[in-house]
Image (cartoon, helix red, strand yellow):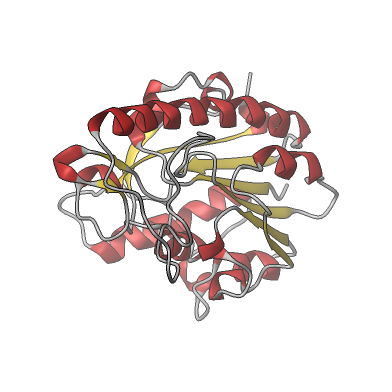
Amino acid sequence: MVVNHLVWLILDSCRYDSFLAASTPNFDRLGQVELRYSYASWTAPSHLAFLMGLTPHRSPAGRFASEVYADEFAQWGRRLGVETRFEDFVPELSLPCKLRKLGYATLARVSLPVLNPRTLLSRYFDDYRLMERYDQFAAMVEELEFGSQPMFVLLNLGETHYPYLLEDAPRLAGLHGAARGAQAPGFFVAEEMERMRLAQIRAVERVDRLFAGLLAKAPAQTHFIVCADHGELFGEDGFFGHGPVMHPKVFEVPFLEGRCSDIV
């Protein structure tokens, strides 16, 4: 049985409709993007769900949550090329822990300080690093090398997070403006909201162009997951951003997956 490499790309804050509006010829090679829903409205808890082995869900009606979770854990067997079930994840309930037991090297590169290596999210990773800037997917691709040992690679991409690669955007300092003494700008006007919405779409397109290099590097037995951790608001109902917000657009995320060997 061939064990697959696993690469999980998380486009931070990327709205589902932003992904749809972008030109993504390289992501499209993996398969059809679908609408799914995040388990949380901001980065840290969403990534915790990911690292428990839970991808964004479909919000199925008429089913018990326990059934949905069991089905989700069973999907890892298909993705990895090994037999797996929910019981294999306990008691840790950790995807990187499970993969290390299977002989995987575990590597993570993250773009946002809220995911820094001193948080509990870094547990069970052999190599976990916060990038120097939020927009360094190109550097992640350049350094990544595959060997004979199966790899689990988690890449949190900040290009689609505020300020969406805009050099002159008003800055929300610190952890999304929460740092002591940080002074946020006045609330964004409609024109600024629209400018940032369009910038996020362009950021998706930049990430897609860089993804071509990762596809070229990845061995045939590499399974990719591409999704967002949550969405973003650009003025809808008076909101901007994500986090302490209860709005459908914050929970709508793109999801697609596929294996290199299946790409034509």
